[in-house]
Amino acid sequence: MAPILVSLGRDPRLHCPSMLKKLLFGCFAFVVLSFLILHSPAWKLRDFDQIFYVTIAYDLDRHGVFSNGPFAAVDSTVERPEAGMFFGPAFPTLVLAAMKLDGRFAEAVRCSVEANRGRRDEATCEAYSFPMRLINACLLVIGLIAVGSAAEVILERRSAFFIAGLLTLAALAAVREYIFSYIMTESAIFAIYGVFALAVLLAWKTGQRRHFVLAGALLGLLCLTKPSFVILFPLIVALILLCGHRSSKDRRPSRARCLLGFSLAFAIVLGPWTVRNAISVEKFGLTEEYGAAALIERFAYDDMTPREFLQAFPYCVPGLGDLVFDRIYGTDSMHRFVFHTPHSFFHVGRERRDTLVREHGRLDPIIGSIALDEMRARWWRYLLVSIPLAWCGMWAGWLTSIALIPLFAVACSRAFRTGQPLLLLLFAAPAITMLGLHAAIGNHYTRYNLILIGPYAVGATVIANSYGRSARMRGRG
Image 1: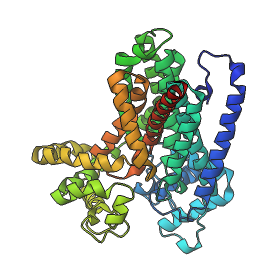
Image 2: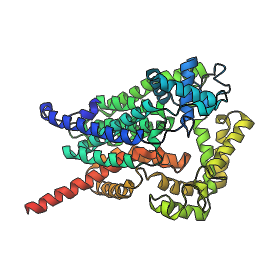
Image 3: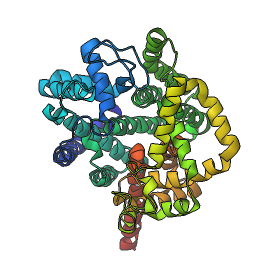
Image 4: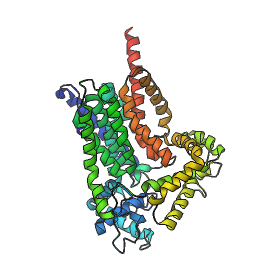
């Protein structure tokens, strides 16, 4: 939390009242988010993707093995599973910690996993996830504070923290589908990414190596939560080489030292996990099958018809899509965009993935030839379909994004034309890169792009600050 509360070139004593206000604001945000999350429906722990993480936590608790969860070859309620590396270790470890702290939650996890394996009646399992819901609220507040701090760093105005914080809180509160009440990674990713983006921002602004080191370590932790974030490593390296020395007002940092500090911290955090994989799984790397499975499921969207391509744009606009289309039951022409409908893109992709696993056992050895065949036959469809998928994925924050996205676009346009504030473009670049990646290898769901809420809120704060400054100048005139 140190970089969140950092003071840049000012007397720290002058910041005590400001820090107290930020702390009170954080407490307010925690109360609001906790209330919303705790009053969400009581989900069974088998609902949605929760079973992935609770099964791994169960295997860690019972067998001391980080497995592939429900994808393990054996029933872990009966025998010890093999070590796995499909999922990152960060979030399942957090679930295990919650199990150790709350025996009632631990029993709910055990019952749900054993029911999923057919060893218990699910009706006897309690839908209890109170500790994880509170943890999710706490993680969201950490990410919110990081966003507000980023706005303050960019604009050098204390009021920017509260404007961006309120906008972020509104966007998080508006997120649909109760996603933060599930035992899933969205809250953890939002928090870790938010602090990572702030650390990178401080590194660019101050040129201090300690911020580059912190950014590298946080990016490593982010990759241990979701491996696809590894794509940000070459992006940040490129930005350090191209822009790092231009954004620092105090001094020009040594790009070699900054790059070395960032890279070493990144490697140190990821090192133990990759070494463990080489020893236990006999494969050196962050994950296995993860990218191949996602890409195979993504190829199903290349069957999108011209009508679906065009209708995707109004379909995904918050509010408008709900009025014009049936996004709940999928009874209209856009039914293939609803994951639970028969013949949906999701089910077609998942069925093909499962078929390939049954035929070949593993996907990694064959994904190269599958991707090559797809690109040879339909590369143009793949590129075109990525456009509406990115469009659909960018509406993080649901209805609030209708206002935030245009303001963010205007702020980025001004920054691009005038260079003021250049830091906004650098701050937004990683989140936008992940939006493109999710469109290329994922799907259209906004839950994968909630990290965009931060740049949106900061961009809107930039416009609000500009408008307020203009109003003050007119008042003086």
